[in-house]
Image 1: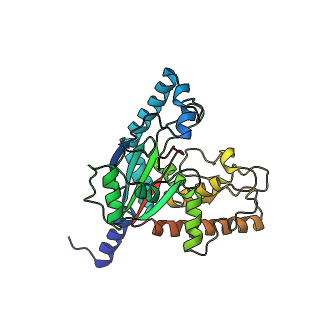
Image 2: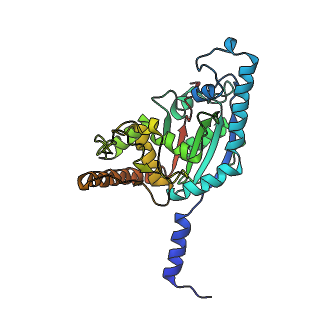
Image 3: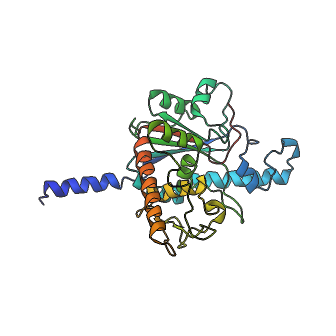
Length: 309
């Protein structure tokens, strides 16, 4: 069967656009089981600052169950299926490596210099971006000697993320493929990189109210939920969008087929023009992000863990 050059080109472009989640590079278990993240502690009903002496056996069992659930999900078919669905919109080959528990390793395994360069620590440095070069490959081989990097090219993207919690009945802290990207863009490091490398101001058009009513919880509709509206009031805040809400907009733009879209019910012409400006602004950030992550090793502390530097 003959195929025209244009049709062949279209097929190739379609395959590139729909390039799925490339691979799971495995998991790394924290050497110190007592190290747990803030959200891992909350999920297990533990005071985050609690010391080992304050943790009774039942508490330790809850923490262990959380970590076991996080480990199971990180390597599950459910994670891979969701990653294929979301990451195909990024136009990049995305590999993931999960850190179960905090970024802690046996003494002498990883040099202090590499820890400071590659590992995030604290709320202010939740993410690190590094070139995916031989130095980055060597670092990954240090933290996981048996990792298979033979199929990873320096133009691909590796996301090395921390997780140790699934959540409880009141709140879910599961590091889904969506939440991994949210954690990356909802960081001061991401904002700093955007400012440093572009003329885009992270909060342009976002210092005005998004909705004529007091709450904006019904403004943004997401493809990540079965519900029609984005109803997490705590995330969307009041009239003015929080950084967390902006991160959700970026995620919707880059991880769904239809991109960012709003429920515009009740808006007048001027307010709709403002939303058009917001959408255009988010599209610019998303386009930059999709190009910037190519050829990068991105390390993200998903839950605010006790990182050992």
